[in-house]
Length: 355
Image 1 (cartoon, rainbow, N blue to C red):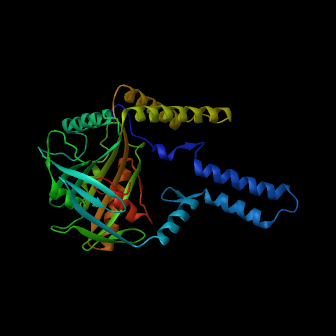
Image 2 (image 1 turned 90 degrees about the vertical axis):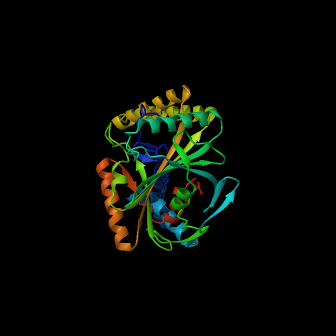
Image 3 (image 1 turned 30 degrees about the vertical axis):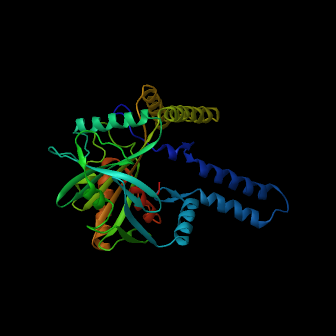
């Protein structure tokens, strides 16, 4: 929303005394049951077993997920269909995408003048998009905007998608063909089927893995955030999805975030814990954000997905490992999305059907 506000840890991943909320609930419940078994005569072993299971459920084991979250992901993966269909249809001058949800979008391709790969050097293009988002936020309702950079051996193309009948900023032209390509639809086809596996999805011509950028806080100041991801030798697509939140609601969300972070810090100090440098940085970040929103800037809820395409499993594994190395060298924390590949594939599509 502004180059004056640094990107950090997701607000959805908020922590108190080093743990997330569901972990705190599991730990408190587990300690309560286990402690009751210890001090109360005649308690059953089932109570102790339940307490130990709850405590184990709070342990983080893989991909940023706790044991409890991983069990939920695995059960949902086992229960849903392995097949997902992405289909498209005409809706006036827009395209209706259906994939675990509906989205009516218009696509606009960037008129490249020199090099633009979202590395922060093209300030005019970035400024135009920021002004456009500010104008959308002034309308009062929440809308969805996405930017997709599709990098292949033939070069990079940039797509902007707007929900409904939106008008693109200057410098963009109608890009129906690129919209279909980014949506994974072959020329002339209106649908494609995807077979979901634990670590990837398979289409008729490719195997595809989708990862999510979960944490930007370790990126050094002044360094381009996504530059190295687009420089991979493999076929990579970077999707940036923004929910542009309308004015009054944006101000309420920003104010609540400041109150929540400040209250958590006060509770931690009252419990005898020192306020960490990370907590101080987070409080400063949300304070800057509230000030920007109060001055009329747009509040954006951001999600970044990176899709890697390959012709075989071995090539895909090599491409994903290369992508994750590049992300870590930049300071980004990446989640692989195992057990959620079909869901994440639908979320990264133009317009974000399934959000």
